[in-house]
Length: 132
Image 1 (cartoon, one colour):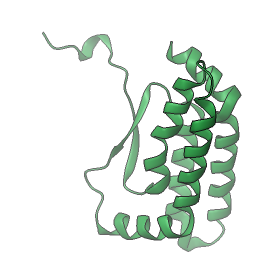
Image 2 (tube, rainbow, N blue to C red):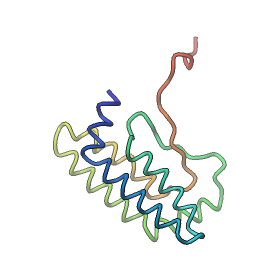
Image 3 (cartoon, one colour):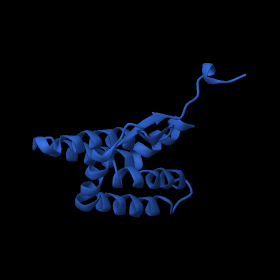
């Protein structure tokens, strides 16, 4: 089911989001000072292309630098991205097929607001992850 949802997602919204975040990451690599935000943008792009079966979690080692970087990000770009995800999520929720896509878009709002100090992890549990 995740694969089907991811394929539909790529067709409806994921491809455009992926390209936007990759382009932003490339542009952020030009000045050396903004490379941490570029890496975060590439991380979000990888999540935006294939979101089902993965989730965003906070890194336990994130510190004050991540917080200060996130404050700058929210002021300069984060709130625009969050508004874009909210609007596209609402538009995706108009149809029944688009509701899971809209929910996935809403899940990207927190990471688009504060991308530093986050990592994307798989939600899949393998056969050897079970406890007896």
